[in-house]
Length: 175
Image (cartoon, rainbow, N blue to C red):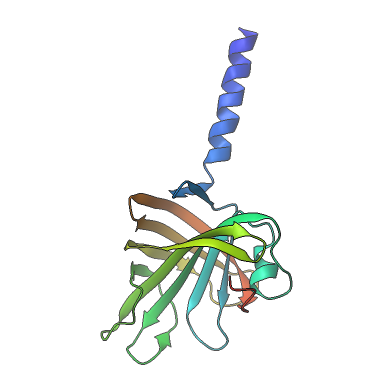
C-alpha cells in the first residue's frame, strides 16, 4: 500500500507541474509560470509576455539580457479606433497580423523560442483570440487576466494567464 500511495503522490505532483501551461507549438511548451504586461510609451497598446524565461520583466524593460533557453508567447492587444489605440477594455480580441480599416479589438500573437538573445524560430498565430477578463491599467501592482484560444498551424494553445504590470517596454536584442 505504501508504494501505491507514493505512486499517487508522484502522479499528483506531475499533474500540478504540468498545469501551468497553455500547450505547445512545434514541440515547445508555452508556460504561464512568468507572465507580465507592459505599455509602449503613451500608446494604449497592451504587450503581454508569458513563458519560461526567469527574468521577463527585467528583460522586456531593458534592465537585463536574457540567459539560457526560452519559449515565450508575446501578444499585442489593441482597442483600435482606425487612427489610434483606445484604452484596453474587457472583451474578445481577434487574432490579426495586419491593421484593420474598421475599428475593433485586435490581438497579434507570436510564440518564439531560442537561447540568450537569439530567437531560433518565431511562429505567428493563424487564428483565434485573446479575451481580456480584467485589466487593472498601466500601474504598479495591476493585473491583466486573459483567456487564450489560439491556433498555430496544427498546434492549439488554450488557457488562462494572470499577468502583472511590469513597466514600459524596451527593445532588447531583437526579442
